[in-house]
Structure formats: C-alpha cells, structure tokens
Length: 310
Image (cartoon, rainbow, N blue to C red; front, side):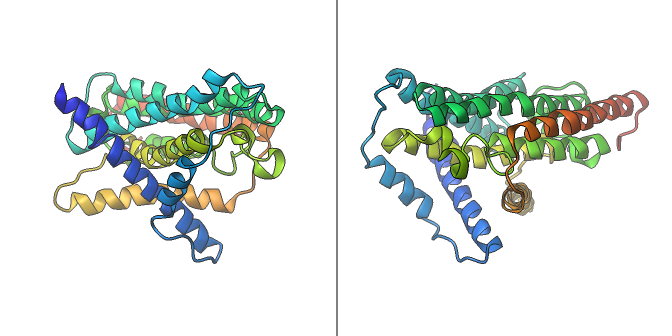
C-alpha cells in the first residue's frame, strides 16, 4: 500500500507528472515562439507563472456557487493526476490491470467536465457561454475518439489492457494510422487548443470559462492543463505507437515518439484559425466519425482475414 501512495505522490505521480507537465508547457511555448519568429520564455517560466498565481488572492464571484466553483479545478486536477500515474506505471514498469484503458478513457473526460462545471458555477454570462461551448465540444469529439479506440481494441485481439495494447503498435496498419490521426485531432480538442479553443476564446468571450478564476484555483487549472498536455501524448504513444520503453536504445526512440506527438499538437495549434462551435461539431461528426468507423471496419476485416496491415 505504501508503494502505491509513494507512486501517486512522488514517482510517477504528483511530483513527476507536474514536472513533466510544466516542461511540456515550456516546449509548447518555445515551439510556438519559434513558429512566430520569437525567442520564447526561459525553461522555468511555466513554474514561475504557477508560483505567482499561488501567491495571488482568490476571489469568488458574488453570484457563484462557492463550493462547486472551488471544487471544479481540484476534480479536474485529480483526474489528470490519476491518468498520468496509470499511464506512466504502464510504460515504465509494465504495471497494468484489466480494463485500465476504459478507466483512462473515463478519467480523461473529467478535466473537460471540470472546466465546464466551473464555468457554469461562476455565475458570469461569458463563462456560461464558454461552458456551453465546452459541453457541445465534448459531445462532438468523444464519439470519434471512442470509435477509433474501438479499432485499436480490435487490433489487439479485443484487449482492454494498456500493456497488451502497447505490445502491438496499431499505427503500423492502415486502420491504426487512421485512428491515430483522428485521435490526434480529438486530443487537440481535449486540450482546448486551436482550432478548438472556442470555450476560452480570449478575443470573443475574454477567457470564457476561466474569466472569474484567480489565485490558487486558476493555478490548479493551469497545472491541470500542463499535466494533460504531457499525459495525452503519452496516451497516444501507448495506444497507437507501441508505448514508451526506457531501456537501451528504447530511451531515444521513446523520447522521439513523445516529441513527435507533442510537436504535431503544437504545430496544429499555431497554424489553424479558431473554428466556430457549429463548424467544430460538423468537423467531428461529419468527417472524423466516418473515418473512425472506416478504421473499425478495416480492423475487423484485417482480424477476420489475417491481414495485419489492415
């Protein structure tokens, strides 16, 4: 029991996941700066920003539901931490349990739900607008996301355990590659990055769901976002790219896989304009969902006929 508590609080849990999250946030800001021909911040800037917020006053709006308003970022942060711990345990120590993929998929919804609930609880009309958009966005991207994971499950002989799935890199097949590309765009929406940043949209609704947050709750949300930025590429690498292995030359290959995913996310973020919420819904349901269904059909056909590259 003590080992599990240690794993959750220190490695690969709270301290390790937070450090990787803040480092990933710096990579995001640095690559974004280079794309825009800027220098970018020093490596410690994300940590300094969080520490500064932790020292600020926490102001709760008069019309807000105080308990829900303050609990929302904690719920999202806790879910992100648990997902990160599960994924790193599976990749670093091959510690996994039957159905952990399903648990991870459920937990990955909670950070988005916490952002939505926090916006509704603030009592601010602009935050409510952002929360409405976040709710619709969740309904949009979760369908193709889950459909593509179904293709991976078929490719792994109906396995729902992360270590078993990682043992068979799905991306080496047509169905796996299609699923990876669809899930990459769904991850973009889960992170709230352009072109799917409609819930925040500073130029339209002045921060949307975050407009009333300050001090410690805002710092917790920022940490949650940083951990999600670090965790979702690990999830994609585990499910589609054969996992991360830190032994021998596997260390270099694992780092390259992780950087590939995170750089793709950052480049999509910096090269696409924001979509309206109706455009985002059409994009996920009209285009990505059929591609995900095609991936499932190809995976089933490949399994039935023994064609691994399908």
